[in-house]
Image 1 (tube, protein in one colour):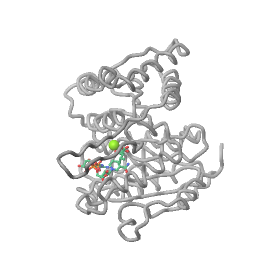
Image 2 (cartoon, protein in one colour):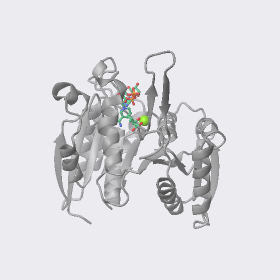
Image 3 (cartoon, protein in one colour):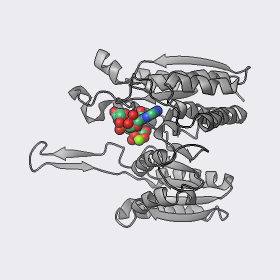
Length: 349
Ligand SMILES: NC(=O)c1ccc[n+]([C@@H]2O[C@H](COP(=O)([O-])OP(=O)(O)OC[C@H]3O[C@@H](n4cnc5c(N)ncnc54)[C@H](O)[C@@H]3O)[C@@H](O)[C@H]2O)c1
Ligand SMILES: CC(C)[C@H](C(=O)O)[C@@H](O)C(=O)O
Ligand SMILES: [Mg+2]
């Protein structure tokens, strides 16, 4: 195992820097003593763009590429600012990194912890993981607008799905399913309507399935999947899905398992050619930024994914156990971002 992690950090906007501050403390404390943590903090985000006109140029991207991994809070500024229209920061910063660093696996574990409040009356056991494709689908920016601003405007947003991109994602999901107790993979798509992409996803899942005879395969249309997220979430083990469906269902999963403030994610480049990037599922939450109400647990749990990514399984387990113990003990008690971070940190000591 490596004895040094060179980490690039982008706190970003809103609650991003607030939750990242807590995550950094926990990460440092969780790492084995003989592992050096080198941190470089970058100012990128909507605020930085408003002040400097810079989003993320190629030179900065090259600097980010030199790190072993990246930790990101969240980006996204004031929706009322016309300069930020069109997702300029989300696309020019966050998606630029995911695409440039070939983060084709967007890994989003979902768990209902004891004593966590779920809006479901009888949630049962929830412990599944969403393997969201991260570099294709509706996110490529393919499309365009004709006759903009007129009654005759046509706006096309094309979902791009390549056999290469789908196959590597599906294979990753099967590998993951094979390592888990239940060994069950559910493809979530919309093959009854998205007949080109959906049919290809389905075919590739069935083809790869022949190499994993011990993994059982299930299929759900995305609309039906949202029903089961609420009525029977324990049926899921590993879900594989495209970029946009994966975005939507992981916010839903966060909401039914005790809140988006607990949902972690990793944008993984499994080949190791580029740094993987770890971030909470949630956004910059402008409605609570600066109030101390943000839950940093999702960001802290994202560092557990980072630790596991580098093989520090014991350290990852300690972070997860500390978060779990904190959730179990504190329940819904109103605490500040800093209080939650300190409580989790104290449990690691
Ligand atoms: N990875 C990212 O950087 C990322 C992810 C999602 C959204 N965004 C951006 O963030 C901005 C706001 O987006 P949004 O409002 O749709 O989604 P959001 O996730 O920021 O907020 C949705 C709701 O969840 C709450 N919430 C989010 N994180 C929380 C936490 N840690 N603790 C407690 N409550 C929390 C917010 O207060 C809000 O009520 C937009 O600009 C969006 O594009 C960025
Ligand atoms: C901000 C946005 C581009 C991003 C996405 O859609 O992937 C976010 O919602 C997420 O879930 O990480
Ligand atoms: Mg999202």
